[in-house]
Length: 161
Image 1 (tube, rainbow, N blue to C red):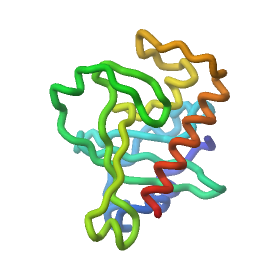
Image 2 (cartoon, rainbow, N blue to C red):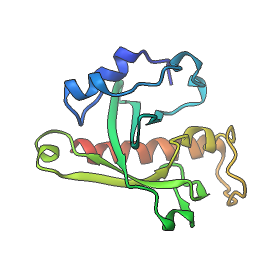
Image 3 (cartoon, rainbow, N blue to C red):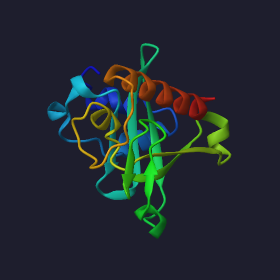
């Protein structure tokens, strides 16, 4: 992924108003991100732990979505699998819900998926971040990256449909 600026990120949001996008907390350490290892930039809002955001490039344009998570519950201590990168974690996967873009979102419709709680899917797939015990897969790293990108594109398509 190419390095992004705060302004590029703010203008890429598809499921919130321009005012909401201008007020959300963008990571302050954009220059320090491992851009070469990222398929998307994902982060949790440090001032609102139930809020998360992700931004990626699809079909040559940036797309960013606002996500919400439920509060931590006892079921999150079980081993769960991320629907984007297919990494399993004990307590490290959350149901993240995105309001749909446009009229559907204004009517309260949303789309959810189980994702790595820290949104570090790209780093898990590449082995740059450890999850402890891994399930064995015969896919190459490049095939895992392609699967993650395809799963993310399918999720974004549901948000923007």
